[in-house]
Image 1 (cartoon, rainbow, N blue to C red):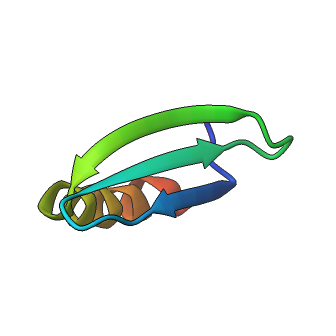
Image 2 (cartoon, rainbow, N blue to C red):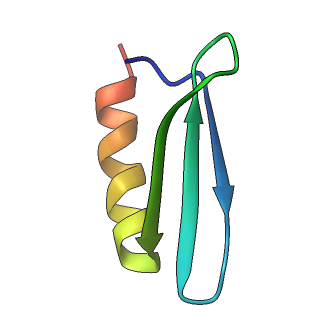
Length: 50
């Protein structure tokens, strides 16, 4: 699964993320807290980078 675009809907206590592939189809959806979002993004950059 390769995420080409990551959309983030920011809220006060929870955030929703949607990962899209190169053709624009959703391949990942998740609801996260602020802390979990920071943890997800720090891990995602390591996994997503070549």
